[in-house]
Amino acid sequence: MPGVGIIANVGAIVLGGILGLGFGRFISERFQETLMRACALAVIFLGMGGALREMLRIGQYGQLTFVGANMLLTALIGGALIGELINIEDRMASFGAWLKRVSGSTGDTHFIDGFVTASLTVCVGAMAVIGSINDRLLGDPSVLFAKSVLDAVVIMLFTAALGKGCIFSAVSVGLFQGAVFLAAGAIEPLMTDAALGNLSYIGSILIFCIGTNLLGLPYIRVANFLPALVIAVLWQML
Image (cartoon, rainbow, N blue to C red; front, side, top):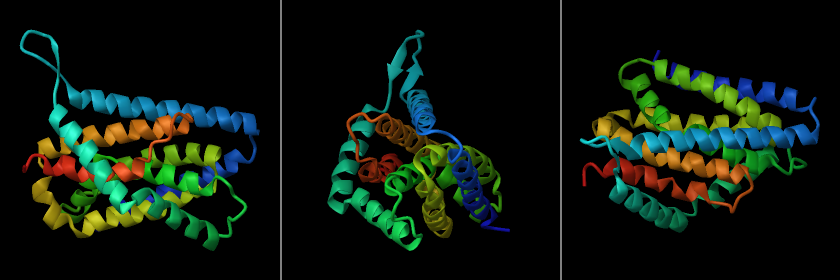
């Protein structure tokens, strides 16, 4: 059934969040802080590994070469300018504040941070895009099933450390992957191997930035870099 992969992904995030919420109630604040640092390190190295895989190539004589520098600079700088003009980060935060209010979570001081961080983590990446396209056009939800397992574990850990705002990243995943699902026919011709490589390249860098935010390093408004993903995909056409 087309769409079953998206439904499974949303359900897995909710289930992982509920498990993390129950788990988080039984551990002290000190352990929750350590868990959050562990999540941050895992996200940093996942992002770093994905970025290095795309940016480094072995040359003819065995030397490492850096590829995609022009695409990287154009996507990040152009994406940042567009994202700041649209102010995506504040719009996500406002949506998180609305969810916080309607869910009766006004006393949860970490709700919005948890929602934004978890949403970016599970939405940024090639699996979300290609999985939704496959689910629509090929009736193949296998990529989204695999993503569901990964997201469930990630959200379980995030929720234990950052609270129930992370559970509502299921809304973000449903909206984002649902939009890709509906637009799959138009998007599919753009999803060449090179475009997917660029998407993974920039997406991994943004995931790395999410990890540095979790560590409490100088804050990067990662959501305002999301247009960089579009530029990365369109780069091959330009």
